[in-house]
Amino acid sequence: MHTHIGLWIDHRRAVIVFPSKLSEEATIILSQAERHQRRAEGALPTEAFEAQRVQADDVQDRKFEHQIQGFYDEVIAAVNGAAALFVFGPGEAKGELVKRLAHEKPTTRSVNVETADKMTDRQIAAKVREHFQSDTPVIVLR
Image (cartoon, rainbow, N blue to C red; front, side, top):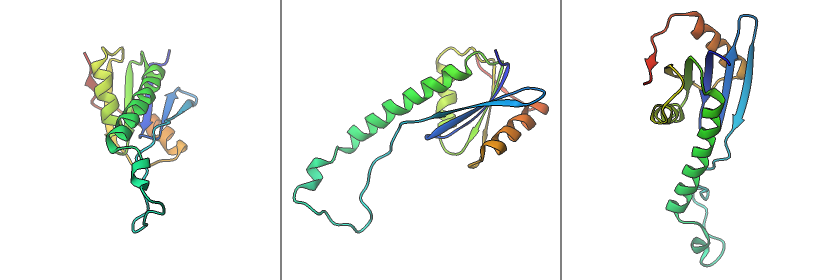
């Protein structure tokens, strides 16, 4: 059981880092979620009634939401039981995941959230290592 876990997440993938004194282990979870498919700007339909063959936006939104919730389930299972969790990344995924963690009676005792840009796996590992070496204020989930 790892006590400290770092998690970089966006809607496409999650990089989970388990730091230790000598090195760190990393796990990557890929999302199968796909956003709306759109036609290139200025492109005209090539067939008659083409719009009727495309799924409605609300159907695509529900499909995306279902896929992303499955992705969050995998990530939560991987970080379950950590004493301290550091969540960072671009966009909305980190906030959505933290809300979901708080809602599901968390076994994680403290969570710290930070906005970060796109990063390489080495940059992610370095940021996690740096975070857990400093005394950073955390959010305690109850």
